Image (cartoon, rainbow, N blue to C red):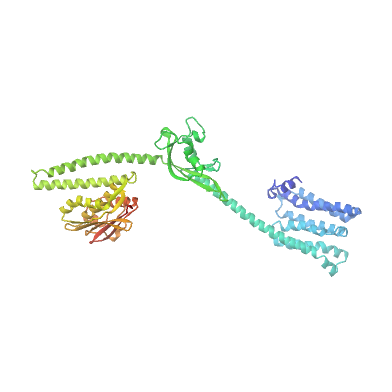
Length: 544
């Protein structure tokens, strides 16, 4: 009885009980109903208790209940307990035969065993048929025993078996549906558990610290990598600390970040951010982390909390700083001697006592020193690309082109190359002067370098709608179709230039395109092998 109450109150699930308890609870409703029949019989006709059939049916029900409690069902086959509802049909039939004239509707008690049989899930079609036949025999056998089995009498008793058959069919369908639903739920639970294990394994495997907060700021999940990073941020000699006490700094600062500006507080407040750099802890054990935060939603669409990812970038930052130090040192170590070489070579060229052969040698020295200087500039620019800010100021692209033409005129004249310039009007832009001058110098130098002696190079600066356009056209060796796709990639040179033995690093055009894209523009090329090339630079036109 206690277990029955626990089940009714939802404190215990029926399928969690043992086989014996389940069999007893399945039989108990019939016994309680037969007890109610005794009470009603006492009220309606007290001498019913003297009937042998009535007493036998009640005793049989009690014996069956006792058998349910005594039999070790766990040791028997799973279907063995179905013997009990089969015996119930005999008890109900006997009770109906002996008391049917006093209490009507006793045949409906067959609903208990029929539900038990068809709801067991064991061969449902067979159990439905067996329950229908057992119900039919329950009402017909007494008539055959009393020799009152006339067609009209048997037909009058057919309603109860038909109702039991219908109840059995409905119960079987519902049981099968519930079983299928239970299998589906179990599959979903197994899948969910598998995904949970997979997620835990992934979180413990990746080298990114992950921490999940709920809406109130309580930690729901923290992986091993994050626990290590968190330990780094603890004050000295502290096993645990609250957020305000953690050692969290902006990189390069010695002042702790205010509590409301820390990644965890901002994420809990609903802020989303990416790749913000902080330093955790002090001294040699401090770690530099890149932090990103995102919100996550619950099933109903409401905000569930926040997820933070901490990437340890200590080694990356150290490598970048080492590179910057190296580049700064190399910039000085390379440029200082090259400047001296170029300066002394130019002074030697002005010496009137030099012979023509010596003057020619000094020109070669100066030219190669300048070439080496440009190569060093390209390499240093590539090394520091993206590491420095550009300072954009109002410029006139046409004026910059004219200035570059004047600077390149001696080189063009030395090879009898005609340098045409069409840049009379103003072409206003807003750009970084150093970057744009580098693009123009690279395009003009390449046009001269890859042109034959006596050739022609044409520069044009113009407006096209909202664009400021520079075209540099030459009639040099050109670029093959197979090389056009990689001409703007770093350290890539056309096969024609390599075969011609023209020196270069393959960096100039790549850096020029990067500067153009940083300004919201583009650099393109049209070329034909043996005919020449046209490089076109487009930058946004400065609006008044």
